[in-house]
Image (cartoon, rainbow, N blue to C red; front, side):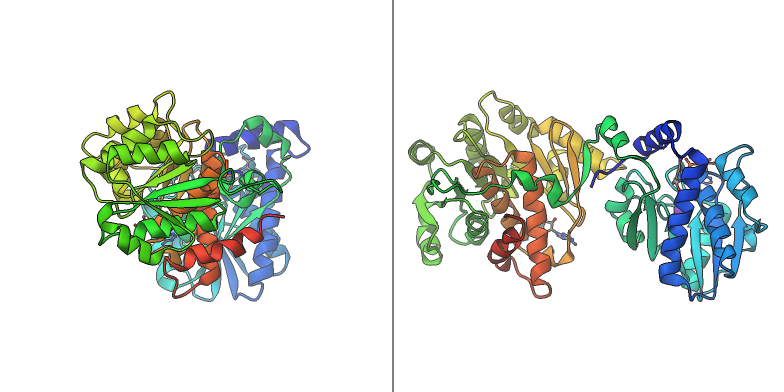
Length: 496
Ligand SMILES: NC(=O)C1=CN([C@@H]2O[C@H](COP(=O)(O)OP(=O)(O)OC[C@H]3O[C@@H](n4cnc5c(N)ncnc54)[C@H](O)[C@@H]3O)[C@@H](O)[C@H]2O)[C@@H](O)CC1
Ligand SMILES: Nc1ncnc2c1ncn2[C@@H]1O[C@H](COP(=O)(O)OP(=O)(O)O)[C@@H](O)[C@H]1O
Ligand SMILES: [K+]
């Protein structure tokens, strides 16, 4: 589940070649061999194979694949825009391949042939143009299926962005560990099925590299998931408070409250303005309800009940009151565990002065903070970062550092970043989540986990994964109300 930047991957490649048992050329042969095997499993009955080789090591992998497919007696055509650099591993692979390469300009894609894309991998350094761009357009027009080696040419390994033009692969075979471009959109969509192949690089090299980026999968946080001991009582199992909006916007807070309860929090209290008490009361059973519409009332509640985690923002409304509350909650240390989740309006309300929020979050006694913006809300707090080209990981990490809190930058490829530099790209997102109120549920799940003592980064990663897994379990027709009810089944699959 570790994810490596192209620089980290090439450093590990180098160290692996030095340490043996495989030198660089053998690693390339291994890469080509696993790719050829994956191709044969799926596409052995294709009319033929057009292997497009670039000038670097990615092209080198392509020469190995071309040779292996040709040795099977398959119809293989080799095309190259530029020959590999003399003396390189790729040049050796080309020498060992009995096929003569034709110029890429002569490539005529056909719908019944498989294109093996070995033009560029991790070394893509500028937008694709010329014969390579024409080949990409021609393949798309012909509708030929593409197998990408390492990643579809034209996709930035670092950010997942399309650089000029990029293949749309049916299969991507990558080596050792995934790169950000496999997980971040649009790259993720261009990879098709992604197969991670072992090419003989020892896992120990990874430990030495000290990775700080992962694919968000249960192995990352499973051991930190809360479990209730036999002597647990409801309050030490974690008490979550959720602030409700006014009488016509109470649903979002109830979704968050329900999700917190279903995530295992021992008690959940909805804090409501007087005007919305009756509306809320009509819809609540296990969840407690308390009036809190002044600073005194909120302080009184915090002193009486000491909630471990608090959600502020869903359906709350933007204005002075939400800012006052957020700052008050950041001044009041939460009960010894837990933290504060600021979502939606509690984020947008600081658009004019984000520094006020960040300063408060850095206060010595401030509880751990989790911010859960979608891209629109992110742009309000971090306009400079939102406009930045490039990787969502870099943006989320910078924002987390600036805010002094965990950033859950939502979307199809949600990135979770901690101020200490750790980051994860969510691996199980699903478009079923694109439904009103699903973000409110996510805020509640994270708070539920925080209240039970899970650290903020792990709680955020787990929350994002559980949320998406619940959506997958339900499938078509999902609405936000369904999500909390599916959490028990998802959790049961994770907790022994
Ligand atoms: N030991 C290793 O380092 C291994 C590397 N492997 C392969 O090596 C690849 C990385 O190899 P490289 O670092 O040589 O990089 P690439 O082969 O991805 O590309 C670098 C080459 O493409 C050129 N180039 C970059 N962008 C271009 C553009 N837009 N238009 C035209 N030319 C462009 C560069 O000048 C350079 O010649 C990986 O993706 C993987 O496929 C595998 O063979 C496994 C082992
Ligand atoms: N296409 C998608 N694929 C995966 N996840 C998605 C997609 N669209 C939205 N989501 C997820 O759904 C949630 C929506 O949250 P948000 O935008 O705050 O909505 P709301 O305010 O309606 O609750 C986020 O967790 C987001 O990551
Ligand atoms: K490629």
